[in-house]
Image (cartoon, rainbow, N blue to C red):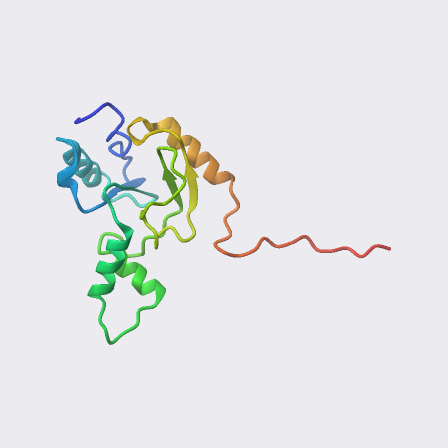
Length: 166
């Protein structure tokens, strides 16, 4: 491994059919020696995962990804949201790209051009821990918080029926 234990191990411990890891970003050449290879190995080892897709946005620009997808779109057809989502996701995610839980490390409270389209209905978790120190316990805490949330995807919670006073 290129770095401290846990950095790539968080992704590189696949259980067959359980999770799939993918690095979002175009510039792996700027990563520390060995880390790009660790990430590629985690992606290959988890390629057939279907239950949990883990995506790490590293040196990634959502605006660039959206602009690139829009530039490839046929000018004589306006895409539906669903079609554009699949087009933006690319062949590695044919069913789209929606993010359920976005974890932002380092104490920042902004998306910073990460997965803007894909995070439209994502639950956001902001943690003070820096990325190199983010570990399995931090991930477990974020996932536990995710399961406590009421996901409405832009809808409203059904109010309790009003009962007339007698």
